[in-house]
Image (cartoon, rainbow, N blue to C red; front, side, top):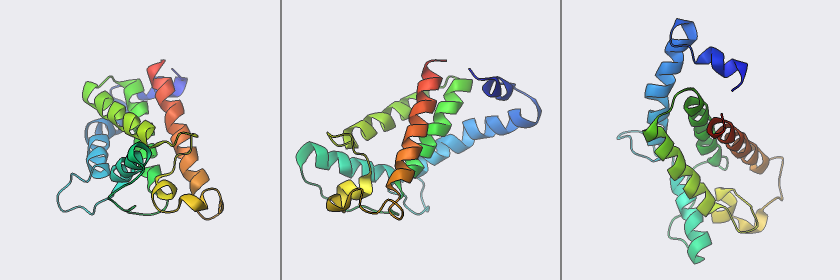
Length: 157
């Protein structure tokens, strides 16, 4: 565990109360948002896009369109990163199960050659890697890599 995580592990003080709010309220709420489970909130379709991409990989076809912004995958990756850091501080079986479900879904959405970006898998497979400056493929890839490192670190602490 890094020295920084040891600092946040403290139960009291200025940061302790914010860490607790993030762990107890924000991370679970964000997971519900990613799953479109908050009544009255705009749908994010973030995890729904991964379900559709997984369906394409598994069956070769799909019933749903891509919804959201081209960088929608980054919301899932950022949530995974936050969840990983939370798990590094405090074990939480429900959060661990949610993380595992998200990771399993992402693995199903990843193409056989390793490519992972639901927008391009669903909407524009012929345009993969053609507009790196505008299409956010590297942005999303970077966030999923950061999440992977955080998960690895939280599991191996």
